[in-house]
Each structure stands twice: as structure tokens, then as C-alpha cells.
Length: 143
Image (cartoon, rainbow, N blue to C red):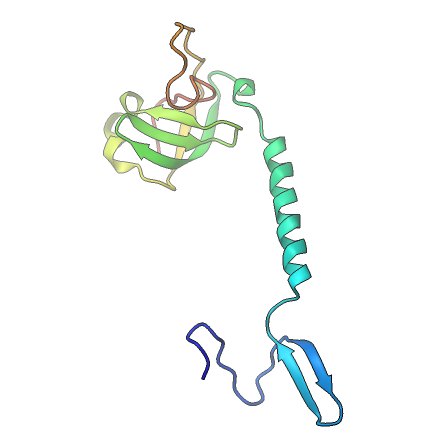
């Protein structure tokens, strides 16, 4: 009868449901366990608005103080180092040359402590991964 993703119900079990139709003459109710579609839309919109406000409050990479320590989460591992989310509007690069023995030990989702380095001097070639020094760079790795 029911598909594999449908909930299994038993007699006497309490559930939260929404009445779709009530037939007084037959004494039957048509119920759904699914939330009201408008609730889904409203909840999704509220979540998107909350996320947008949180993103707007994040500091810009340029506003991060050079020399400051930031805790971040590894979001990508590359041959040249790891890309780290330090809570700024841009991601940072923890270069493999700065990681020492931790090069092969860091994975996506790991917490790392990084030092914000000053942006490299402009040489006309543009920035590398991590936004050309926008809050990138780090010292020591960590985990």
C-alpha cells in the first residue's frame, strides 16, 4: 500500500495532522501529515531572509586585521593548500607551505586556527586562490 518513504502509523498513535476535509454525514475525516504549503513557503522565505541578514553582518575580508588569529572551517582541499571559511565575506587560503606537517592531515569540515596575513603587493597579475590575500593566508595550520 504505502511507499517506502511514507510514515508507518498504528492504531492509537498520536500524530500532528491537518484536516483537509470533514464529512459530518459519514463521520469521516481526510487528513494530511504534510505541513500547510503556505507554511513551507513562509518558513523558507524566513530562513532565506535570516541567512541574507547574517551574510550582510559578516566582516569584509579587507576589514580583518593583519596578524589577528581567526578560527575557521576547511571548505575545500587543494594540492596547493586548503580553502578556509573564517566568517568573512570572502574565503581565505591556508597555503601548503604554511601548514608544515599538517599538509595531508586536514580535511573538509576540520577546524583550523589561522593568522590573517597582509594582502600581497599588487604585481599586476591579480590575486590567487583565496581572493588575492583578502583575509587569506595563514600561519601554522592547526586542528
